[in-house]
Amino acid sequence: MSTKLPSKKLEPHGNSLFLREACETLGYSDQVFELLSGASREFRLQLPLLRDDGSLQIFYGYRVQHHNALGPYKGGLRYHPSVNIDDTRVLATLMSLKTALVKVPFGGAKGGVNCDPHSLSRRELESLTRTFVEKIHRGIGPSLDIPAPDVGTNAQVMAWILDEYSKIYGYTPSVVTGKPVLIGGSEGREEATGTGVAIVMEQYARHHAERLEEKTVVIQGFGNVGLYAAKALHGYGAKIIAISDSKGGVLNESGLDVDALCSHCESGERVSAYSDAQPITNDELLRLPCDYLIPAALGGVIDEVVAREVKAKVIVEAANSPTSFVGNEILIEREITVLPDILVNAGGVIVSYFEWVQNMQQMPWERDQIDAQLTRKLSRASEHVFAVATGKTCSFRQAAYLIATERLRDAVAIITI
Ligand code: NAD
Figure 1 (spheres, rainbow, N blue to C red):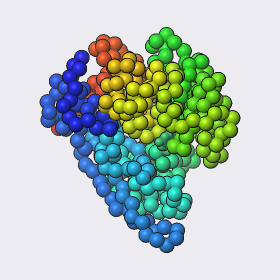
Figure 2 (figure 1 turned 135 degrees about the horizontal axis):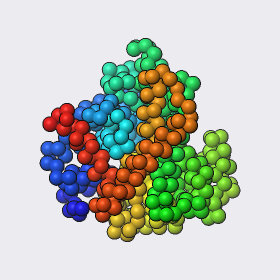
Figure 3 (figure 1 turned 180 degrees about the horizontal axis):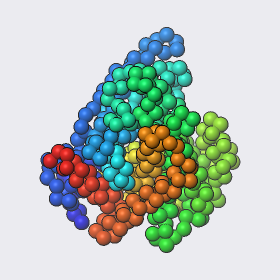
Figure 4 (figure 1 turned 60 degrees about the vertical axis):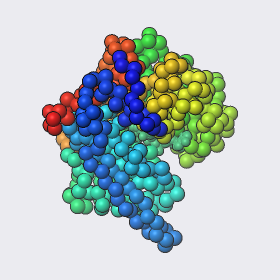
């Protein structure tokens, strides 16, 4: 395995450097790297919003369509003040690699709006979403680009997108995934990413002849992914000792009562307002001694500084791009295992694919069929990554990137080269 590092300027998200490293190892030319790292096309949309108080506010929306060699573009839509074109490009590339790794017939895309959804009323959120669709409807569609929920968006936002798109093209449930089950969503999609995190961890533990039971787990981020990961891991018997959201977290070294904390948060309370545990900051949480640390919030949290101070044995990247390139190098030096994002959080796009198939077939699947196929797909992808890592004596991330990059390059080659 080549250990030569790319001579590119280091960046907060390491993805294009991880991709470059994979291309170098596979012996691909600079032109192939450029083809795989750049996006096919990008949208930037001006989104005026008339606020409830009568004032006008201008937001900006983005959609980056990275590659569609393996199928229609596919990826989440993020509502967060930090959304910008550069991060959206990184996340779109990750989607292409993720779909390639777990073999779902989709390409990769990502989008977002630079708004804080928590500071908008329901009417404002709906209006902003409908304006987004008004401006982008020619660029999305069931065979073109299929958005899904991500940070700050949910099934309701997907329902507004479906409704606005359907006004123009007629009823088209397959234009989005992650919508409410009642209007064409899939059973199990809401839980899929978090459940998938636990499935990959279970495969990893099994690979090492271990069990998740009684293993200590720390989770940063208690939204869609963090909450369902906690529920699934609790089901496997793991001991979840700390959880946080953006305002801070709670710690109980004997194990948190996950059901009680989920009920507390599902009623709209912050994690830090949960009284039956010790308060903890996000900085402290990332440095807690534990078996598994699961970043499940935003990208770039395990940077150079945090990577030196992490005390977890394994980092499970439930968030997209939580580890910087330098952070990753330090974790390797410190022999801390990283289960990479493109494998760990792929459960969401796998069940999104099942949802899209159900919409195209106009035939809902039973829940047990969805759960079984999710487990099968993620287990196979995990075993493949573990086998390549062993065979090439490389990290799990390098193995995942090698598999995904080669598959993506082969598909692009059939069409383009
Ligand atoms: P979400 O909006 O539902 O939840 C995000 C959580 O992170 C919230 O609890 C929020 O309070 C917390 N958070 C935000 N900033 C934080 C900070 N600085 N410190 C600690 N916590 C913070 O989002 P989500 O859908 O759960 O997505 C989380 C991550 O998982 C993102 O990186 C996303 O791209 C990735 N992901 C999501 C899906 C999906 O299906 N939703 C699929 C694949 C990957």
